[in-house]
Length: 338
Image (cartoon, rainbow, N blue to C red; front, side):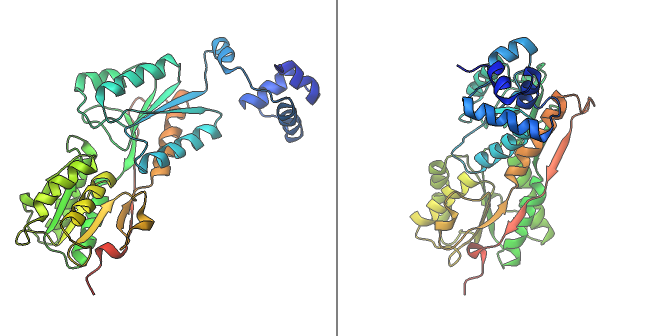
């Protein structure tokens, strides 16, 4: 196995220069950096990060826990965080909690055992006791919450501006002529789901439309469950809404299944809009009107804040709160028939 000394010998530089190029800790001139990188490629050299971490107490590694990597929002989130980490010489370990509080607890312990220097956390939908969440976030390791922000716990956080984003989507449906607009939510225990429901109510209030409790359909993040809930609500033409707004992508898939099962078409029979791009949106006909979250930017900004904490760039004790705007992509599913 080639050593760092061999890399230095081939490149014609000191071992210290090779180390500086690998870690990025000290600036190295471009000609020397290219020589070192060429020697690393020629020798197929791989730095021993474990040995280095034992010596320096630094692993240059972050962890990120997300609920479900199969939901299209989260891979974009991870990509943003990974790019920001890589730009500052860190690696990122991504793991999946399955939206389960106990699994989340196990993964936090696992990442700490891997000696990650900081953790990005999208909290699980399954209720996490407040005292357990406080212990998690009060641990010695720096942590930033993203997308789903816990209640009553001061923590650095990055998410979309949920209220304004949902309000924008519902206002669009109203502008298209809808008056009885249902909302299908995910797990309402989550703060971001409640805030999106608040945005829905604000849009109705602003248009002088009364909130009908029977048009608030509380679901979860399992499309098969949501479709069952919505079929019961859509089966009676006399009480059927003229539009549905969804607060997240998995819930939207469940609503679309319910449309299909009830023989309904959008927008002919019912207008439709949702938070989050759907993974196969380009295959839907008609195309789906969407409130798009800046998932990549949320991941990137959260990683930057975490690294600033780790490296001492930010020393303030108060938590940092970043809320990014969403954009509305208007497509066929919300247009007036004809």
